[in-house]
Length: 290
Image (cartoon, rainbow, N blue to C red):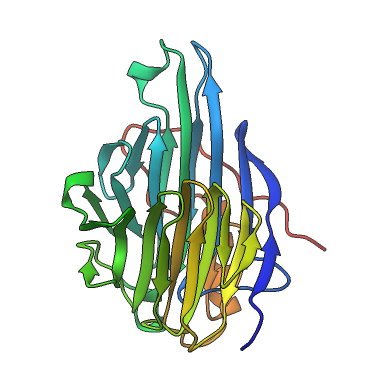
């Protein structure tokens, strides 16, 4: 039996929102189609404060936003304008060029509220990298749930545990929220070749070894694993089929061909990009690292 690889999250800050980012890392660039994993830490915003991430571009990926607390307004260059609430899935496929805005809805700016959630990126298969953009919103009630013997599984995207999400993923995917009551056990099957576990909260063991919260554990391929909750435990399980080749990530761009990323950088810098209706402010292209 191989020992799981453990990746420590690094601390980031996005527009004042504290983030933990275990993926990508020097030890692991991807897990299935997942190339980016941001845990937006539970943060209380006082009256008059909130998130406001101005227009920014994407190519070659899908973003998936999933909240535990708070709300976000998603707007994009396709004309989408959607409020995302806890338990909903906000799914945006960038294709060859898309721009979007993410901000606290206007109604919450006058309140004291908490924000807590996840945003991940999934690299598109090569055949979809330069395809059309797409947005869909999936309310919490539309996601399939299994709740048995103290173990609750919600399938956010993809399929597993005899559950299948309505989110239109582009390759074999597993993205599940796990809630285990104290002293319960979940057998993690080998349905997907690449799998990782991220513990949000609680004390847990994987095959008898303790898991440090906020660390990413890469599960050995082809091995069933036992997740045991020493206390009430909240975790995410994700992965899927290996990608069809390596990906480059540069700022908000993901592609298998570096030339495509360079072209996207030039287009955004020149203002040659789809715009979000009603929005004028944007995040400018960061300087290339020498």
